[in-house]
Length: 205
Image (cartoon, rainbow, N blue to C red; front, side, top):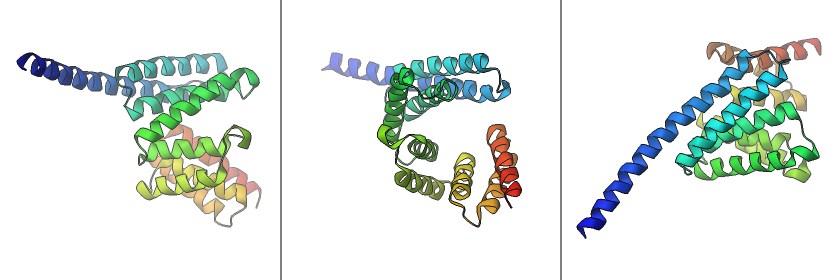
């Protein structure tokens, strides 16, 4: 009995340490993901190498704690970044499948996490229907994410893009709100995208 209790305590301590190490790796992976913004968009090889670094670090986080939703989320982001550069092709279907699996896993572990909901919404919006795309579900997930966090920068940007794509009369207002929010949050990637969206909507007046 004492030996079994000792083993149980050892497992609990190991699990706690694994959780701590996984969380540290997740933070490192997300930092590496954010660092992509500092690389010029036309330097695809450097951006791809950075995304590969994100994937490597996130894989280490998952190996430490497979039930860490944010570890799977970080891995999804790295794979999505690779897909963004490589594009969708028959050769990239394996990577796409893995990206979807990681998104599914993150969502299953944390279905009420705004970051994960926004990412899942955008994935379902961008995927072709034959590959699992579902615009209706994407809209519902985005609404749920913004109900949880009304000031989610990427979520507000995607909401503005959705409004612009549908020709909604409040599209420009939503784009300007997304731009202001991204600027306050110093979210450079979303700020640039929101600024471009506002400019496009102004040109289309």
